[in-house]
Length: 122
Picture 1: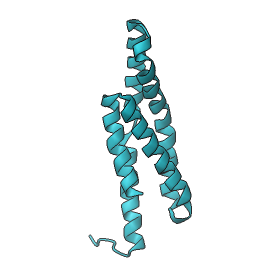
Picture 2: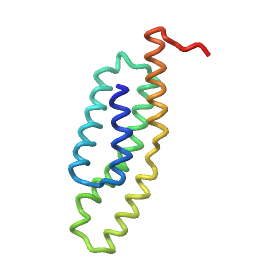
Picture 3: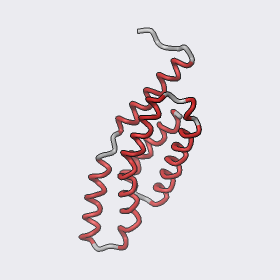
Picture 4: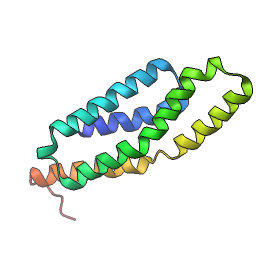
């Protein structure tokens, strides 16, 4: 789970600037695998982690759709429409909250430490 979250966080930050169809496909597959993995392993995940996964999925879906739309139509529209789409895309990608990924990573690590009884004493 931690690997998925780390990979997605990294890819999402790259995707914002890459805007290629190949990269889009990679990210969609990774995100779908992550969702499926979380659903399959739901019985073993803490409710707070599942809630964070759901929030990340919901908050990022609109941004991914706008990025994908831009990638797929930018070559087929005029420059004015392309500029509008790009502005919309940038607004959407600014809504992607990377702190959600970091918080989820921290929660997964904390849960792993609890499960393995390796909580650090401060």
